[in-house]
Image 1 (cartoon, rainbow, N blue to C red):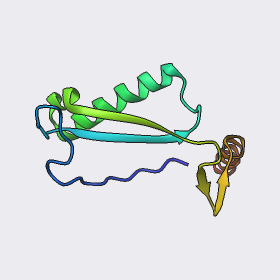
Image 2: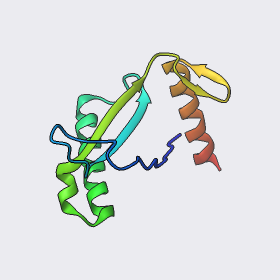
Image 3: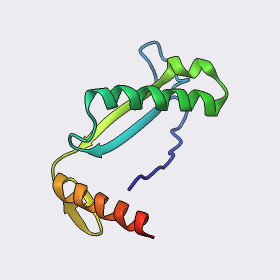
Image 4: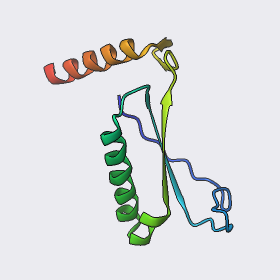
Length: 102
């Protein structure tokens, strides 16, 4: 159930307190409680490294902001239904089983 999208933000929209806007922002949306603290740290480190590598600019490690956002219980809609966390986990497991059985 992974989804990726890239939205280019107009220049100057993301700035630090000094007005510098040479930053990259990555937002990760998960269901509530999907990432333990250990996983949060790992996801941020891996995505930051991936951004810098993809851009060919190691200095982006210092200028990449990763936002971890959790959807509220019942706030993740799939197939026209707002799923609870348990329903979302069941749906993901069913999809994984279908892929593995294919």
